[in-house]
Amino acid sequence: MLELLPAVDVRDGQAVRLVHGESGTETSYGDPLAAALAWQRAGAPWLHLVDLDAAFGTGDNRARIAEVVRAMDIKVELSGGIRDDDSLRAALGTGCTRVNLGTAALESPDWVAKVIAEHGDRIAVGLDVRGTTLRGRGWTRDGGDLYETLERLNREGCARYVVTDINKDGTLKGPNLQLLRDVCAATDRPVVASGGVATLDDLRALATLVPEGVEGAIVGKALYARAFTLEEALEAVAA
Ligand SMILES: O=C(O)c1ccccc1NCC(=O)[C@H](O)[C@H](O)COP(=O)(O)O
Image 1 (cartoon, protein in one colour):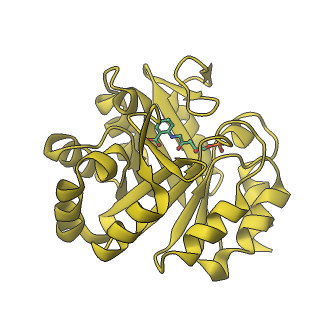
Image 2 (cartoon, rainbow, N blue to C red):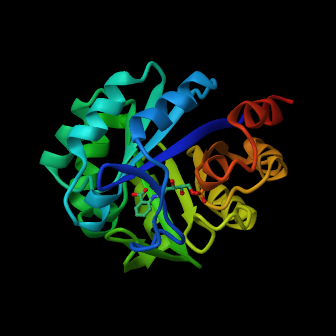
């Protein structure tokens, strides 16, 4: 069954959604803890929690993020600005289930290989792409070819990938199913789909990709915009 990961992206202490992940396009949705608790109460098995300030290099929300993780009984995937020993220690130290490395996988391949070897499936790598070009530093800089990087990370034993089509992210335009199929064909590791989910039919379409390797789907904007409820989403993927 497709796992659902409702998203809480934190900027300047607030839960926000961006369009195409671009700084300055924020819509604010208030207290991140309240949002996370609401998704937990609604039955989410996972929370996808992002420190956008850490991703953009405009500070961090470490204390707020740690508070949210502490309050969760469900699994938490933590993302945003985890690029060195200090930020990794802080992220794993929150007690989250796993972390998602993005920029580091592009700029510090040796360090990423080392932490994959040390932490196994507590490390996922975020493959954030425009076309087939990876983007790092809060999605602001090109970081190489998707499939070359994927091949290297496969060799290094990366346990899981979180794949985002930046052109779809925060737009409610529907997920990029072909990109997900292509990534699944290039790896035997599970893939978490991210970006663009707009309707329950999008989730049903993602659920058809489970046999190809899509394990889960991150849902942000659609939940905040009340396109559907989390309960409806859970029911749609259980059917
Ligand atoms: O995850 C990151 O590190 C990140 C960095 C810079 C900009 C955005 C980032 N993440 C965004 C997300 O993970 C979204 O919450 C997720 O893709 C949901 O998208 P959508 O359902 O389209 O709102």
